[in-house]
Every structure is written in C-alpha cells, then in structure tokens.
Image (tube, rainbow, N blue to C red; front, side, top):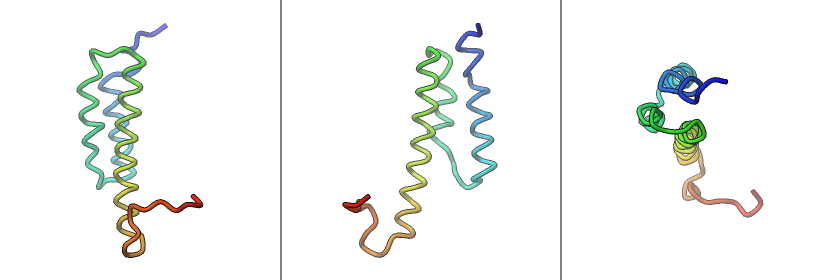
Length: 83
C-alpha cells in the first residue's frame, strides 16, 4: 500500500490547481496554493482534509461573489426561508 506522501502530495495539489485554473482562469486560488505548501508534514487524512477545506473555501468565495453580483438589490447575503 502506498504511503500518504505518495497518494496526496504537493504535486497532487498542483495538478488540482492546474485543473481548476483551466476551468476557471480568473480564480486566484490562494487557499489551494497555501495548502500545497502545507501537505508534507501531515498524515494522509489531514492532507485530504486540507485540500478539501481549501477547495471549499475557493468554491464558497466564488459562490458568494456570484450571488452578490446577480442577486436583486438589497438581497445579497440573505437566506430564503424556503431554501
């Protein structure tokens, strides 16, 4: 069985960054770029958590900006009761 360093490492993070950048070139991806440099000393579980969390931050930031841009005036940031 492969070690955590062989399964998820800085190269894995760079490939993920490259794939997301190809799909969405305007995203700076600071959380993912920072995560790439923090993987080496972590266990496999922590590596996967770190990349997951960084990806979620990227996704949430983009969704928030899109919602603010396209929501009717005065409604950005509000949640509807019905979902």
